[in-house]
Image 1 (spheres, rainbow, N blue to C red):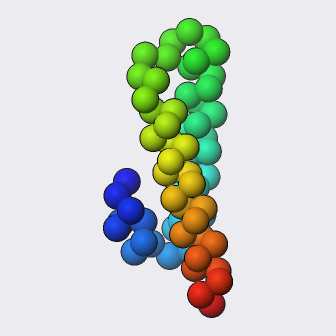
Image 2 (image 1 turned 45 degrees about the vertical axis):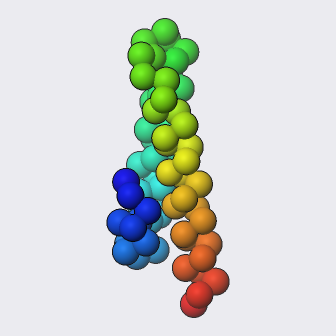
Length: 64
């Protein structure tokens, strides 16, 4: 998801999106462990997006 789109979301929406990303990260780890992983670039995409969401959540909490 684009950073512009993430900035427009509320804190609640960002927290939900973070949960979805954590589940996706877990599923990717399970695929890697079972040898089914074909798109290894997904790891870095998910990690980067988790970091962006966490950063935005922290910034929104400080802004209040």
